[in-house]
Image (cartoon, rainbow, N blue to C red; front, top):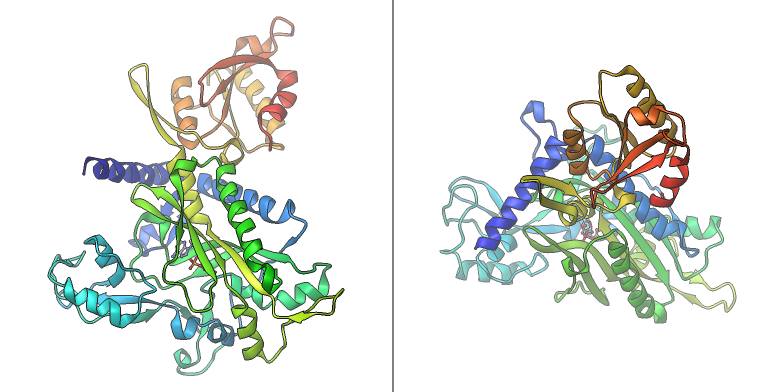
Length: 469
Ligand code: GAP
């Protein structure tokens, strides 16, 4: 119980820091908000971009066998029939008869300690729900009076390009996952580049889902970003490649600086009929271990379905052996916001310094929104401000920097600690003097809080060494 309270407090602190320091804002706030959608602020967009940069570097730049793609959000509606989303992409919905608020039945069961997941059949779920109905409370009004569970489709409809009176009958969808854009471009990539099986296609982009309940801040939202890679293999090599991909993806999170003790694998027990094997990488968020990424062996389902629905044969002819087969796919599917939240939770630290609490994000340097902050010791000394601005200008073409002359130096350090800035430079009167006696500044390290004097002319090389980015 005490641990729960501590974890709730940690989550509240992170949500508050995100808002206060410009990482994440609730959407449309001046209009009263818009449920389950968030905007990324000035530091948030930097962190988000840095996460995506690391992902792209790992998945595309450093791999000879993976290429990138940026497919459109809108696609032919038939794609979503072929993928199974129109018929089967749904969550179990329970509606409170008293206040009409809606909740996911599997989550209501989990909250009372009953094991259930969204992939269970409706009949089974209804049986379990009925058996526990006295104990299940509506999160909004606290009553225990629910309708029968039904499936609620998560695809988001649009009227794009549809000029009929009742466009909802022929909807176009906002993509529910980015990987469908990869499957339908598989043949294009094969024909226009030099890739050969095994190879992968990676993409980062927005996805949309009409989530019934969206809770836990940016963990589950209705508009979110995915970082997905689909790897096309020979049928009999699928599981060998799958094991390699699992290991590769695990290392990615360690490379982001996430502590290994906060990660774990969860094997899917209720596999969809075509899947060979499915694991999630879970992170230990303040609300418990929850999915960060899925690494799944999908067999030949995706290309077989798109061959069938499009009428185009998507099978592969091996250029050397002439062997023909339908490629099998293994996928890595991660959420940018879930990675963002994991990075923040892992990096958040509170330390006692001289009797005061220092909040510091000990984020990996490559991910830090601001790499270097530059301060003049005194705001009202134009010569110090001028010199600090010169240093700031010389570094900003290389690194994301910030100039700050507001408040005392201690306060400026604290502000940078809170957003995870690895280095702060202070320009003082000695900085204005000529070397060797002067011409140096103080560099303060975020984690150790140690300070050292560095000659201004050596700063470029100093940071090249310290910031490998
Ligand atoms: N192509 C496979 C796929 O989309 P998924 O498990 O539904 O699989 C993959 O989603 C990843 O996308 C999840 O592990 C999670 O990181 C992210 N994700 C899914 N739904 C999300 C939501 N509503 N809000 C934020 N991230 C989400």
